[in-house]
Amino acid sequence: MKLLIDFFPIILFFAAFKVWGIYVATAVAIAATVVQIGYIRLKHGKVEPLQWLSLGVIVLFGGATLLAHSETFIKWKPTVLYWLMGGTLLVGQLVFRKNFIQSLMGAQIDLPAPVWRNLNWGWTGFFATMGVLNLWVAYNFDTDTWVNFKLFGGIGLMFAFVIAQALYLSRHVKDEGDAAPKDLQP
Image (cartoon, rainbow, N blue to C red; front, side):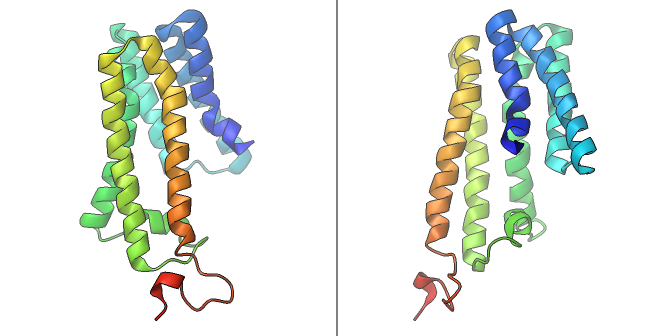
């Protein structure tokens, strides 16, 4: 159910685009994100900062798309969101010496500091790459191709990255009976 809630705005954006075009789809995405945030707040009482950020970015860039009647703004929205997330990880690591990936996942998984650092850099690079890739598709292909990429390509690449990350983590996660991960034992 959580996955459906998470993908609710993009699925509605995709469907609305296929039926009515980019401007109606943009309005639908804004409305769906507002509904999503309202639902999360009612159901869980708390909305995560990333969800608020996503709402702000869709309202800002979606609103600009509708007001200026230019699809350029909505095409920049994923890139801005990716770069904000990657930039947050980068600034956290370099400026504040804080690993936000570890802060987010540290209670669920016990990993050595170098592995946390690699995860943080991996996600930073992934978000930077996704931002560039989104712009490349947006400026080199038609809007229909961009929308398809936004849904299928973006989610597919995220899924592939998470699988690769899981494989990487599997080498470092401690078993209940192990004192240390295999590659850290003498």
